[in-house]
Image 1 (tube, rainbow, N blue to C red):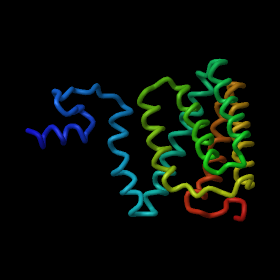
Image 2 (cartoon, helix red, strand yellow):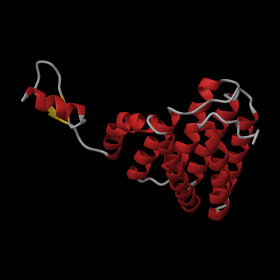
Image 3 (cartoon, rainbow, N blue to C red):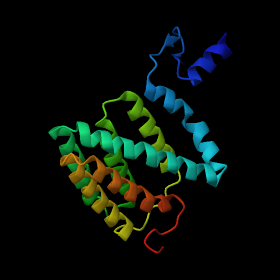
Image 4 (spheres, one colour):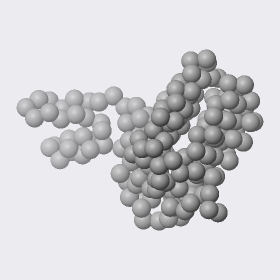
Length: 188
């Protein structure tokens, strides 16, 4: 029974506290996707091709999210995107903070869908890719270009231009996909 309960705890289904009864945890999309993270990262580490497949899946996912954002964004959502842009501008010279603020933009974009499945899958994709990100030097042209891309995406969303937002996101993700292989996208 103890081993079965420990297995359920590893799966995120129960919480075990020494001296107390095991408690059933509520399931959420976030907890289910989170349970897969270690396995997905291990799988991605074993094959460069799988990382490229994940980047392709991200492209399809985030272009869908940017289309939804252009259709549904409230003034508050657009302000949230602009705040994440400001955070990115302030942290451009700090590589450690730069990835965090970069991902904050993508999370804010995905959150506009108000769909917990989208948010959980998006967070999973971002977390999985972050393990393979090769940060450019602070102030590198790739960071500057990403910020310009985000400004363009935000302007399209604010203008309710779904096609323009999809185009801008597609160009951004194709350009930055090289940062996950350690290739300088500007040098290409």
